[in-house]
Image (tube, rainbow, N blue to C red; front, side, top):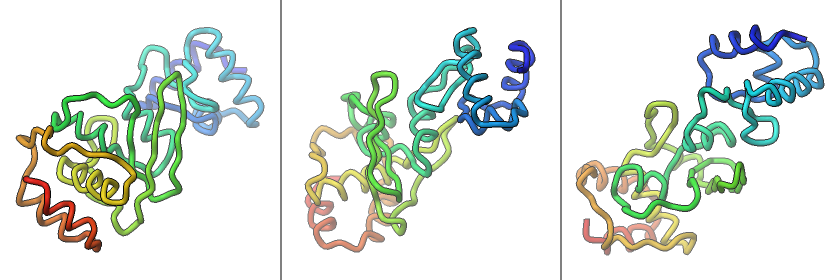
Length: 194
């Protein structure tokens, strides 16, 4: 087993904030998955690692934000819906869960008392996101399109009269919304005063 100081230095040098057991096995050059699990447990007990979820860890001195954790826990995904709207100041209320979009099946993961909710969106609509710091998030325009899309199918409730649209490029919003092939979506979208 590698000494804890040596392990800490290797993990810090990697530049990553979050590690799966497979990442730890590769970075620390551990031969078996069982040994990686034991090493992760020891490093957690020693205060070097913090367990985020089953098989997912971070360095104790570099605790990642919720959005970075959300992107890591279920891939591919990007932050959207209420979380993105709150991030951009469009929604003033902070959502209780971290909301993301994925082309995979919908999923809810509870980690450290926080809910990470992943809503399924077809691959052809899985776009309109950017890398922001250490996470991937919908643009303000795409977050609005995503939430209106889910609202028109009864999967969320929206209150657009409460939205603050200062950060929204309205021309881009209209252009991007034109790519949605759903009459129900366009009926709801066009009824919102943007």
